[in-house]
Amino acid sequence: MARELGLTAAVATAPPRAIEADQARARWLAAQSWARWQRRLLPLLGAASLLFVWWALVAVFDVKPYVAPSPEVVALTMAQKSNVLLANLWPTMLEAISGFALGNTVAIAIAILFVHRKWVEMAFFPIVVLINSIPVVAKAPILVLLLGNGMAPKVAIAAIICFFPTLVNMVRGLEAISPQALELMHVLSARKWEIFLRLRLPTSIPYLFSALKIAASTSVVGAIVGEWIGSQIGIGALIIQATYNFDSALLYATVITGSAFSVLFFLTIRMLERWCVRWVPHPA
Amino acid sequence: MASAALLSDPAALSDAPAIELRGVTVRFESVQREVVALENISFALQPGSFLTLLGPSGCGKSTLLRVVADIIMPSSGSVRVLGHAPGEARRRREIGFVFQDSTLLPWRSAIDNVRLPLQVGGGARHGRGGRSPEALLALVGLSGWEHAMPHELSGGMRQRVAIARALLGDPRILLMDEPFGALDEITRDRLNDELLHVWRETGTTILFVTHSIHEAAYLGQQVLMLAAHPGRVRGIVPIDLPEPRHLSIRDTAEFGAVAGRLRAILETC
Image 1 (cartoon, helix red, strand yellow):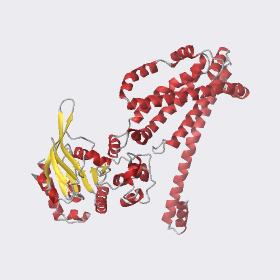
Image 2: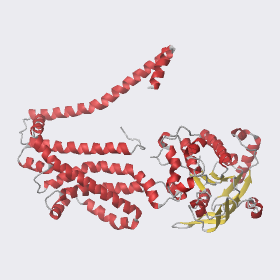
Image 3: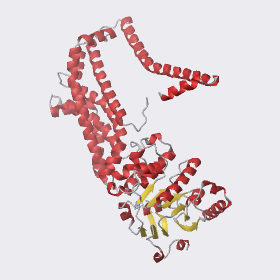
Image 4: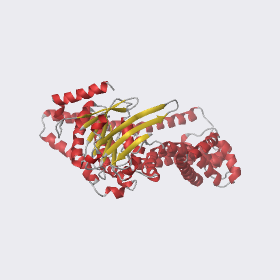
């Protein structure tokens, strides 16, 4: 503000050269603002063109509604069946968020244990890798048998799917301290818990958030996969029902509802990250 | 031989030496062989003096600093810091350490980085006396930058913050491990001058590691020359240049002669 005022004051008495420079600056600012608009408009344009191609393909090839719906039918279904979609979204949201909280909390706790007790890591990390290598769709039925048909198995699947990336990243983050920083703490006679609180934990936060952003999307996937198996309610259950009824419009509407939540969840975590981690430059 | 010049008769000293090493040897065991980082190092340093450590890489300069700071235990020999074992001096916060990398915590502002020693290791007890964090930032020429984050500061400014942090609680010993090694020459010269100013203001004993002949000669009252493989004392060279020193001294013939002498000794290391 003050700088702008200073600039205009300078221009009033400035020789022609300064005015020229000022015009160049104005041109540069205009180019910048156009670039900003481009960044916002082009993705919208891209999405709109794809929607048009979708609509055109369905119209030109006369695709039957039980194979694939046209976009306007999907939009209509989303409006008309919004209460059904929302009623099924709530349980999925609850499962995903609970699973996210549970899986990440356990992962962080175990990462802290691993970093402070190396032998625990050596004993159990291979088993964690092994369990992680089992596909989610294979783990889901096992958990449904174990935990019954309620919310518990879905939360468990969402938690397990979050667990591994967070564990690995958190261990890396807690260990990403420089040897010199450790020496500094030693010279200051810092105790172990002080090193943890003042050095390791803050160092690990950016690593943690990279994992949490992955977990935000995958926890929703976990909850949906859990609902595929013998569930009556939830986005996953609705997907199965719509598929068996050849209700392609409802199927697409359900998928869009689920992904919208997934994206929202991701953006929330990213906002939290930007608020918490201010010392690492973030890409735009 | 050379170390005798500094190893004054204890009775002649009014105070215990700030730093005293006797026959310090440090060996590192590696998989294939044993590496002798330091061999039979002896010297003593009087309180308030400025000693620079000069030698080729691999001569154990940094190891020597870490022995004094109680980061590395010597394999044999004795180390006394202000008449105490290094660990005791460390716990009493008599030692400030400045690393080559500023080692600032990136999530803390400049002033909060300077405050770190108050917040760990029972530092609140030691930090009460002496200069405040604000005064220390002013001492290193950073008043007005208290709330800047490390990524907003230049390399030279970050190193000034690190010096201010090391000075919190008025430690009587300041150990500096190539603190300006990563800086450009212009910044380095300016910081050399400011370090001399800080030294005169605080009266701390400074042990300063460098691999720059000019820096060693300009800063030190004496230069401890180390030879490599294994690291051992090559000589202690007193620098008879007038004090207080200013950068212009570097253009004098006397300074050139001193630097030339150091270079000649280095070439035999």
